[in-house]
Length: 341
Image 1 (cartoon, rainbow, N blue to C red):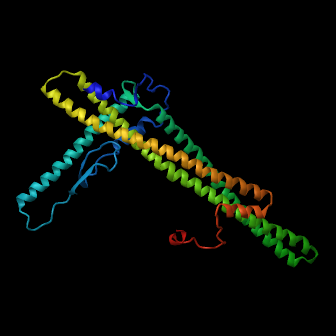
Image 2: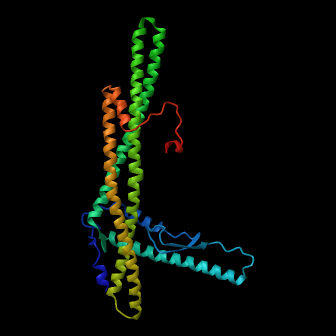
Image 3: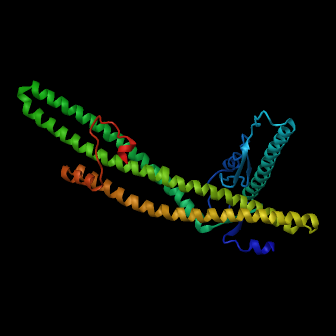
């Protein structure tokens, strides 16, 4: 019966070699970070609840049973109050016990994988997609940083050009013999300033879109990936536990423990497969959204920069109109959230 359950897994179990590597898959986080992730997911005893999950779990499966404070009804008999207190203490003890057992199993599995004495379940295709997403996020973060630097430099350039234009205009009034020369230089700086403000608006829009893609869309997918990786560790921990029980002697006591371990393993397997499906869907949608967003943003960036350095003011303004970018006049306040709707 156990072999039938374990044989249906869609993923493969890869034994860990003596050097701690699973085939050629790279290790993303250090052992210390993984252990910290196991330990920080302790139960919150301020609010009493029955927890169905454990390491790395979300709020799903929580059954609230009331706060940890004693009822303050004056009509409650003393005996009844003691029973309530004992019930709350018992629930909290069960929560800590379940969390402790789950953390122990996950830590044991993690160390077993790291030191080459265990096996881990790996979906090779999904793992490659996850690693590609992390690498893509790092590269996009670099682009975002460079875009912000470009915005800062453009803003400084605009301030300098604006000040230089004002200085030329002032000297044009006070130097009659050079009035014409100072005058057309002042007009040139004002025109450059105007085109620069238009370019700055386009670059700001580009940076804002990249920031949303990196810090919201990609980060949301990576949060689901972290939940999936936590569920994978739990799944392997309880799978190993079930395999060890299956190889042991069979008696009345062991049979009951085996059935309990089998039920727990099945619950963690269902959770793992659900999160694996969620990650696959989010990765697909993220890729589609990334292509759509970047196609628009790269076209905007190219057209705006090309028009600016070509001195084509008309094309520069048309680029902003094409992408529905509205420039705010200098000193204008940011619109309220109602105006942005």
